[in-house]
Image (cartoon, rainbow, N blue to C red; front, side, top):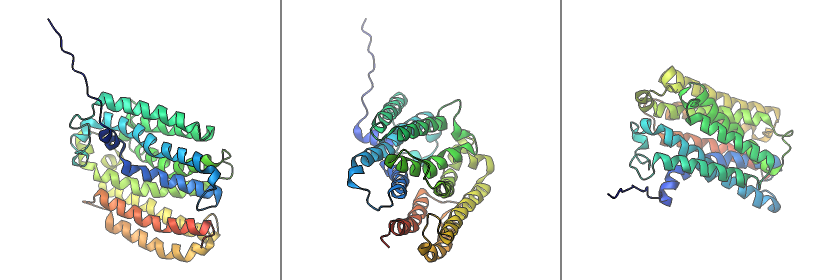
Length: 301
């Protein structure tokens, strides 16, 4: 008697990329660049740093995202089946199996650590912490995603604080001169941008039994928390410019103009029935004062 053993087909490259979500890479690469800018005081870093910084960008973009998103997709599959926003996921129609997603996560995580070694030991230590946090967010029994508050903290700190710190560490292992107040502002802005994503997923998360912060607190309270964090981040930027602390005082007039615009945009774009497109629009508006900061901080303007 012959026994037939089913063999899984290897995932196609386009399906692996779909799991890694290339559109997300900029979300960590931009804060990474901000850290480089803070460390070098230059819009374009010195040429001799380019190889190391580009290697760091590969880690911060494709490798880290694939490592944390693949493991998240593997453990979120039951909930993703209920979420229309995830309908294009390769795991939903079997193009990538749960086992393969876990293998991709392990492979990308190991690759991220190995490649990070070419940047520096402080950078590598940060990448290890980011991987641990990313896995803790998704993998039981810790699964921070289902622990209201920890879901927000893990994502916001990873993007708002770790990104700039990684960029700084890619330039120098000495963290003593890092402007920690910028990590605070980045984290507040990240909270303001992350909480709306929990609102977009609220129906699916509630149906799946995931106790995210939006499920635990409700849409109204979650919205108000996000709005408060957004206002705090915008207000802090005005204060820093007024004090000429990191943000040059020459930016004060622009900050005074942009803060009401950003606050009003949040109120108009974020709320019941919002889509991820509206969150992206808000994040794009935030890049305007960020670009002005880059130009003034480096002395271009």
